[in-house]
Image 1: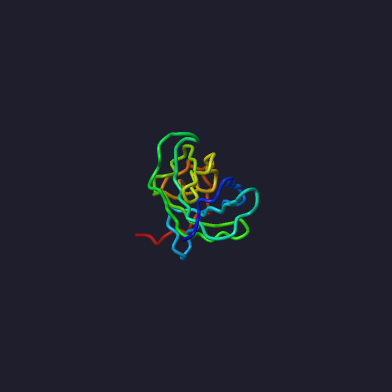
Image 2: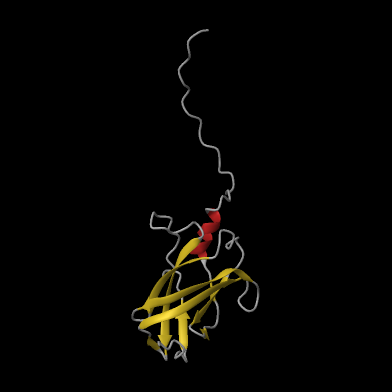
Length: 149
């Protein structure tokens, strides 16, 4: 039996450049999913191996309300501390207000929650939310006269 609870000092980090972004390709990503790349350390060193990860989305950095269901991913491969997962919390999860990601490794809750930055908010724009009206374009050249009736 694998021991995942051996993490006594774990640091999870998510950088804007590492966040990836929306993937609507034919690879199966849904409109409400995004790629999350993280770095997992154990006792200050990059972790290597498999781990069970649980992700929860909240509307506040502390306490607050959970948005959508928990995502439990078993046996995530972590190499030199780095991993990549696809997360999806439902089409309405990103509405333009602040969101924070809570991560649990085995039975160890990582703190603080990670602030969700710009890339997943592109999902909000793709959910049928029209932007403001743009300026009118220039008039085109007049067409040819039609035949007399």
